[in-house]
Length: 218
View 1 (tube, rainbow, N blue to C red):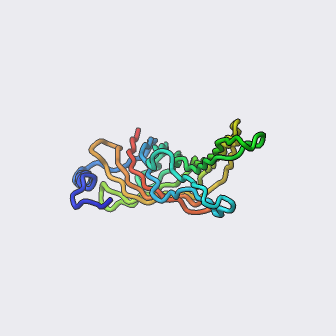
View 2: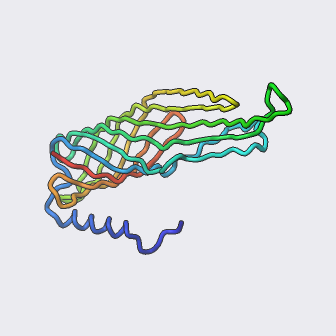
View 3: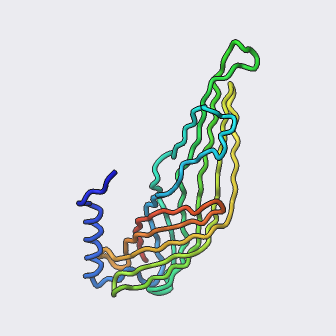
């Protein structure tokens, strides 16, 4: 899809930036805050077989179940206008591989049975981050987050050959997480919008995402 020269999100972003620059309200204040947003996993790859082996020309379906945009949540504490600490939660959409074939019955070679194989995988990420804001003026700030996350990788394999069998596996690991972005107020005290580029360093690869978030302070 080609980008249009006129983009409503760009107009909204420009309006919010102008509002943040011209208002006297700071993007964040010391104290407890909650954070909610939408994270878009832009480079989440479809699952693939590294070696198709004996599959030959058997058709294989690869897909991401649901939207790449997932809700994200956080709660934190700002020590001052620059430094803070935050606990966050986000999950990736499920990635799926499925195969359906017709195979002879092991009990009767003249009878055929449908055979289906489905594998799904999903990451759930709970992190603790240090947050630092660098103010470009009185109101608007550039920020960076860095920390560690407990990542749970859940995979399920289901095989149907007459009767269905299912195997669920979970694996937990500690990964590095980080983000860089811009934050600006939206006209209410201690309330701000943020736009961030995020990354998650896993043992296999780096997963990146974009988040648009809203932060409320108490």
